[in-house]
Amino acid sequence: MEIEKTRETSWKIQLKNKNDNIEITSVEISGEVRIIKLALLNNDTIVKVEMNKEEFFNFLSLILAFKDVVIGEESLIIEEDLDIIDDNQALVHEGILDMDENLFKLQTDSNNRNFENNDKEELNPEEWDPW
Image 1 (cartoon, rainbow, N blue to C red):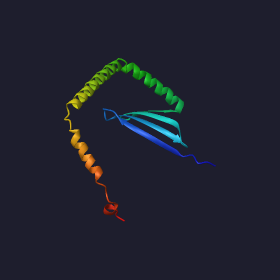
Image 2 (cartoon, rainbow, N blue to C red):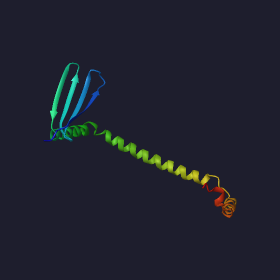
Image 3 (cartoon, helix red, strand yellow):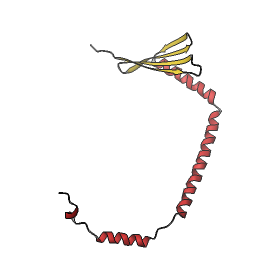
Image 4 (spheres, rainbow, N blue to C red):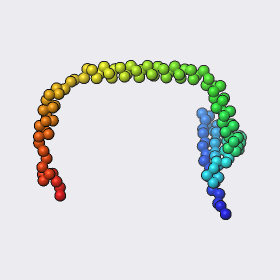
């Protein structure tokens, strides 16, 4: 005999009008989502719908298609904004390259001498060995 575990996950979304809410619930039975519940709440009026997984995916595809109809022309504006961002990034990159050319140059001879002096000084293991 196998025990079926049920777990519900609910999201309650409050709209601008505090009396209007959308509630979405998924019911998981033995690790598999089997029921999706949608509820529209307005004051005392409640409309509830239950769907299985396949019905929910059909509903979701309809919502996504409707989103494309509603947003349609605005997506062109977003693409234009992305082109502007790309142009600005190119200008910033050019500015960084210009800064690299104008940075102070260190004298490499003195740095090399310091490294050579450090190489000649060897560490005595008896001075730093903690054991």
